[in-house]
Image 1 (spheres, rainbow, N blue to C red):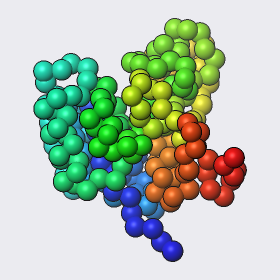
Image 2: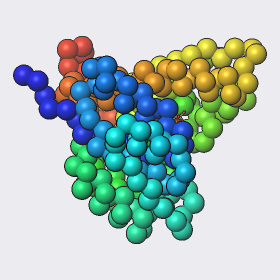
Image 3: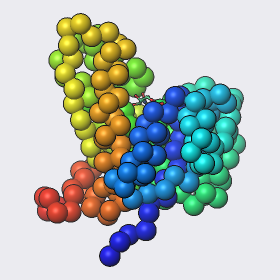
Image 4: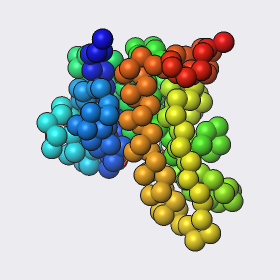
Length: 212
Ligand code: GAR
């Protein structure tokens, strides 16, 4: 039996290349989903332009007065918009704010994030730069469920890349982004198909290992 497409809303603050990877994966039939809307906390973020170019609802919703988190009246406006769009899942794609309990409670275990490092190493901002400065030899990306911590929730998908001697923060981030654009559609398809089963903080995938 075919499942109905997963209704995904995307939150982002930047250029939106991960949002584009979801649009492309849906168009290619690799992700059984539809993007119901995109919200940005940055008025001129390119992610909003991309969404509009693809006929997807796109809204700037200010998160002021807070600088690094989404809380209070702004959080309530985000929740109302996401509910009005009928979102099943929220995909954070370069959304540079901490998600607080109000939004977490509105979409329990239904908020995903893509992080540019192999968690639990290098949580927080500019994770690729942290990995390079630390002297790590392998970097990558992680798609995980968002919980009350910073980049601490259950992991769905990870993909790795080498760190090369000649890397700059920019070249390493670009290499990680190539993998992000594969990992995010893959992770969301695991949710869309119903294959992903969460036990404790560990995901199992129907058809592979059996949950213990
Ligand atoms: C991505 O590399 C994503 O992993 C990162 O921001 C970039 C957004 O790129 N997110 C974080 O650092 C979250 N802590 P995009 O706007 O092109 O998708």
